[in-house]
Image: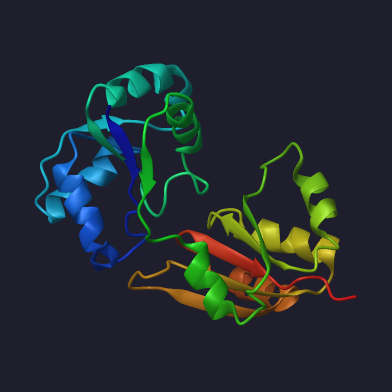
Amino acid sequence: MGSLVIVPTPIGNLQDITLRALSTLKSADIILAEDTRQTGKLLKHFEISTPMRAYHKFNEHAQLQNIVETIAQNTLTALVSDAGTPSISDPGFLLTRACILADIPIECLPGATAFVPALVVSGFSSDRFCFEGFLPHKKGRQTRFLELKEEQRTIIFYESPHRILKTITQIQEFFGERNLVVVREISKIFEEIIRGTAGEVITHFSNNNPKGECVLIVEGHKK
């Protein structure tokens, strides 16, 4: 029986990868990659020659059964996303569930996940928090905001630079003048932390065009 190992990869600085992750990628029979070009850069940097196969949100349903059968044929399969830990706002959940149903052993290595360092540096309460990932672009977006309006735990969102200003503007509209923190380009050269009220951060991004993926941390509702 083969096995599946879920391998977190760096979210920025390549030196953040663990020795165990490197060892797994080297010894694996195949690597399932969200984007083989992106993962190829990582493998080239660390001189890893393990073959890759594309596994992403556009083909995961169609490829699922075939991939499970491949894993079951005495292969060590590593699953990676472009950055961070697979299944956390990335492909991986469907494959993990299918392997469980097929009694295929699964292991997840500890490693990079963008929301953890962002939450820690936010200064907001981190003993209890609500991870929301990416908001719906259209359908269900307003409903989600209304559901979270009274949430007392710290709320965490992932957002693209193209929508961050829109999202914060809507947070101000639905939540009021809430304190928040945006952490941009985590562990990269131009990492930036922006703190303030919704209005202050809106002003910042209105005057400074945001670049790079963002983690948005919103302080919970206070009764």
